[in-house]
Length: 111
Image 1 (cartoon, helix red, strand yellow):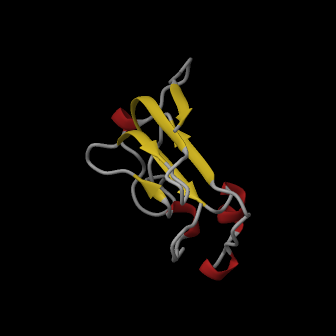
Image 2 (cartoon, rainbow, N blue to C red):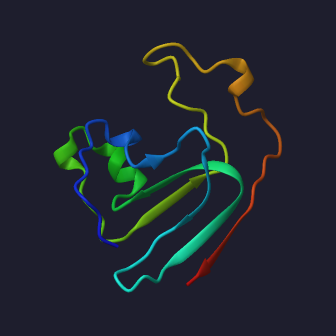
């Protein structure tokens, strides 16, 4: 997969796609128009990046986030958000992920 230019000012939070509708499916294609199509059981956050999560987490500057040579797809079945009390208010109680069994499902087909 070919990626455009990414500017990772805050390396840990760039590359994630979510809008008001969230994502319930996504497809990636190569130059021939083929690739994986993924369907999620409910709206979720999806990240597609040429970098691994650990490399982004360790990058202290945008120039230190190096592509790993693969396309990395992360699908979050639940996400706490950016409010963690380290920089601003914590996440509201109604949005916290509760302890217990949590699950979600997804499927992938190629085309």
